[in-house]
Structure formats: structure tokens, C-alpha cells
Length: 107
Image (tube, rainbow, N blue to C red; front, side, top):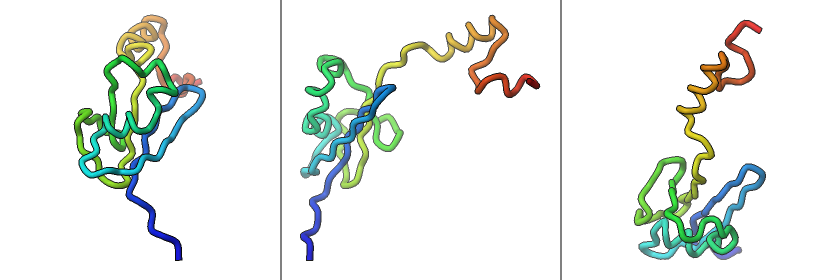
């Protein structure tokens, strides 16, 4: 009979061309910041070090000091390359939309 697994959380960081998922053993009182630090992703992705990280758990933005529970998925968010509102304005000025192709334009 196999020994039961220790409770853990996963920490995820995704780029446009790859995703990294690291499992971290959950310690009592572990926060989002603790999990990110323990994951080693700050060392693996130098662009993360030294800046305030936007994080979430299962798609919900959470503060860095949120205490985690077993099975939580911590997500490290990248900054947006462009403001979506500004992109919509630019495209509208060109008569285009942000949707898929021109599906809504009868083409």
C-alpha cells in the first residue's frame, strides 16, 4: 500500500509559448508569497524578480498574503502587453473588432 501524498499546492506561470507548473508541499499557514518563493519560479524566470507580482488562485485575483489550502492552484499573472480598451478603440477606428476574424460582419 502506497503512503498517502503530502498536501500540496501548484504554482503556475505561463508565457505565450510555454507554461511551467511546479508542485509545492503545503506547510501550515503557507501564503501565496511563500508558495511562489518555494516554487523556484522567481529564479527560473528572472523577469519576475524585483517586481510586484499579480497573483490569483483558480482565476480569482488574491492578495499575496492569502493563506492557501491543499490543492490550491496559484497563478502568477503577466502584465498586459496592451490595454484592451485602447486596442478596441484603435481597431474600431479601422472598422475592425477584437473578435475572431470577421464572424460578426456577414463575411
